[in-house]
Length: 142
Image (cartoon, rainbow, N blue to C red; front, side):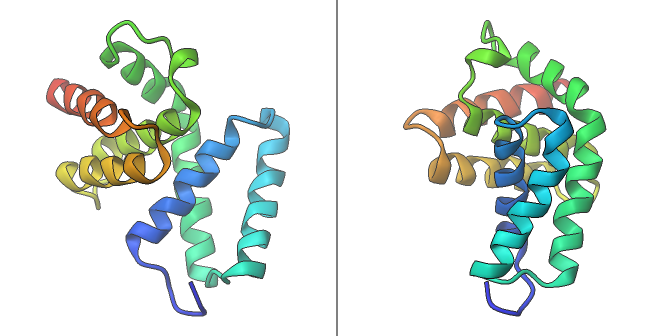
């Protein structure tokens, strides 16, 4: 991740990691944790100011939509309550739903495919199939 701008997949991964990290902190500490995460990234592989802005802006757009996104995930995950979904898969699903339904710059198929790739990299063995099934269900109902 040198001084160059990140590609969309790398930016998406940063957003996913922040959504995942959100599960471990109370709401009042989450913004502070975002700053710490971005600072740590700067020390390891610096993010350009544009990339930092993209990650923070995307998270800011997702936050107010989380109750609606979570309701869609729970309805489509056939009997799985949100608390039973592994945290990594939940973060991937939240990002996937956001991109598929609320981000006009990301085609639905791309959002689903990218979520599946994140599930392969960060989820459990059956995560890619689970993520694919939930996102397909949500996108077909929309």
